[in-house]
Length: 311
Image (cartoon, rainbow, N blue to C red; front, top):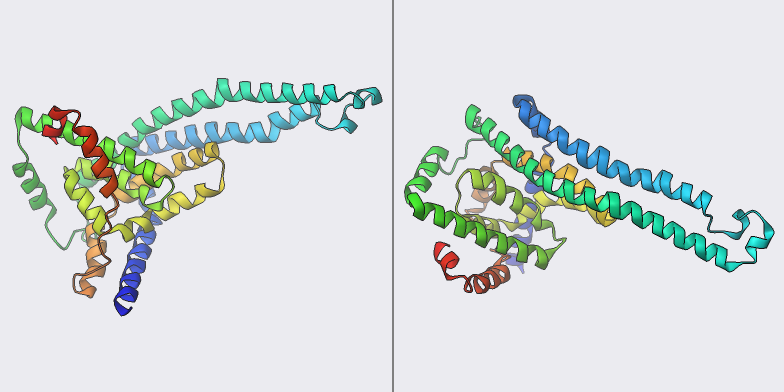
């Protein structure tokens, strides 16, 4: 029982550390101040997803639908002439017309805008991460951000030496990307709204990708420190649990680039080491979050021997 309580306390400490790091939104301002292109891309995300997408939803709910209810009322008292109240067909017709007009609004505006926003935002997220990484590479880590476990340059040099070159490296990279896409897709199907889904894509697809951290290293580190990542994901996921699908997407699309920048400025190893060092190097037990996704992905990859060989 004492061991279980100790594990819970350690997991709670890591969760709070991750939550605190995620709320360090001042890093967004620092990154945007240091890179003009970064501030432009971030502003474009806010403009597209906040002003246009969420603004359109607000216009629909606050202006379009009330106007339709005024023109095509849903209550007998608002129909005007008394003889219309005796005809239920009028109310049914008005309801049908309102439904058709609203669906036309969704089909010809919201759904195309959703697809356009999703594609464009994904490209912008990659640019935001690239510019943020360029800022970190150009200016170098500060003393506060320098990892205390290993030197960053030595680590990157070791990774570059350990990875093959030429066509073999390209083929290996393709294999890792295919496997990563399969793994994340199956993982998202498994957890859907679980808090852990937020930070891993940010670090795996952006920061760790640019740092050339291998996929196996990413998974091992993530599963060993799941409590920290759950805490980091909470501020981004919790607000969207209380809204409809489209509104949730708009909110997530606004918050996501902010957390990309926050994650880029977070020295995860240093933060975790500062906690686990006081526990004698221990911490919560490893949680095999990706076990099922990994097994299913490997079964799928067996259908493509060349890709599996690259992985």
